[in-house]
Amino acid sequence: MEDEKIVEKVTTLIENKRINELRKYLENINSADFPSIFENIDDEKIIMVYRLLSKEKAAEVFVELEHDDQENLINCLTDKEIKNVMNKIFMDDAVDLIEEMPANVVKRILANTKSENRKIINELLKYPEDTAGSLMTTEFIDLKENMTVEKAFDVIKAKGLQKETVYNCYILSADRKLLGVLDIKDLLIAETDELVKEIMDTNVIKVQTLEDQEEVTKVFDKYDLVAIPVVDKENRLVGIITIDDAIDVMQEETEEDFELMAGITSTTDDSYFKTSVFTHAKNRILWLLLLMLSATITGTIMTSFENTIATLPILVAFIPMLMDTGGNCGSQSSTLIIRGLATDEIATKDLFKVIWKELRVSLVVGVVLAVVNGIRIAVQYHNTLIAIVVGITLICIVISAKLIGGILPIIAKKMKLDPALMASPIITTIVDVISVTVFFGLSTLILNI
Image (tube, rainbow, N blue to C red; front, side, top):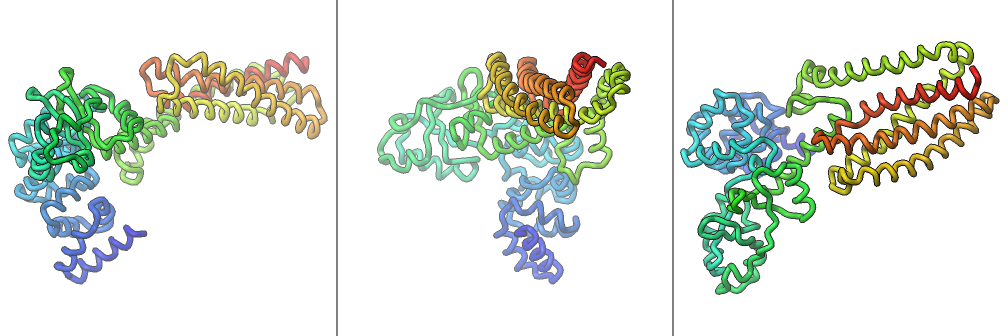
């Protein structure tokens, strides 16, 4: 609702050509609100609005935009305007920008970037994707251990505006090895003549450059940090990762897990509406084809029990209920295990503990479902034997589904795969085969068909 009001206000000011008022209004809008403004005005007005912003505000807004909007802006801006943006944005944002832009745009960006910044960008680009090194920025406050608190504040005042954060300051040796960390609050309450080494925290929580980004987010979550220092193998500080970047990674990982759990293979970072129909179809169709073809196994099994079905057609009525119950039970277990693996509550070594836990849970659940359905079938169909067959089948299916749902994600983790890959679609397909086989096998045996 607030976004709609902002867009309406901006549009009105543009249409009435109240440029000075528009300029003042834009400066008071949060940078994060500009993407929604740009989505609702045409390209010509986007350029006009952007050029009304101050240099600092323009750089802040540019970082918040979607990649296609950034590309459109770069194609319209002058070299001087691009140079201003590249001089103002932080290095991690510059790297993200370059990674997403086509080659011709990257060439123009780098041509309007300071040589020292180009060198830093090239160094950051060398780190593998999805590692701490690829996430970090090199703009941080570093202090010397023999500085006084007063001198430390002088350094912060002189350099703070050009740094990503001033909430954490890092104490380095002459060869840039990380010695300690200081919160700004520790500096504020310290005496001005105290030495930094007397108040710094030497128990520094840090990550290495090649640490997986998902592991980095777990460190943020565990220790409630706003920034994490990134060191090389020699414990030299090379950069920091801030909480805003960690949140972005958490969101990306969550979206990826949801897509895998739904049987979607994403090949783009674009939003739902910005992704083309063809791309959506391509992302979904592979899993659907695999699952559709695997479902023929279920059909083949049912065909082998043609005589059983012909003798007692009522058995077919129970198949959807049995298959759905099995799929739901498997999904419940896999969801809990995937979450446990993601939060490090469950490790691959806990496989047998998970099996024992799920076995007991499935016995309780299976018996309850079997009793309820047994009573329903006996009352509705007046056939105790069918009630027994369905009840026993339910217990077998629930046990199988919950064990499979608990085991497969752990096996995937052990094989260095994403546990979310072993979610609903795969588990449901396996459980469907088990459901049909067990049901008709028991029916043939118990009902003497």
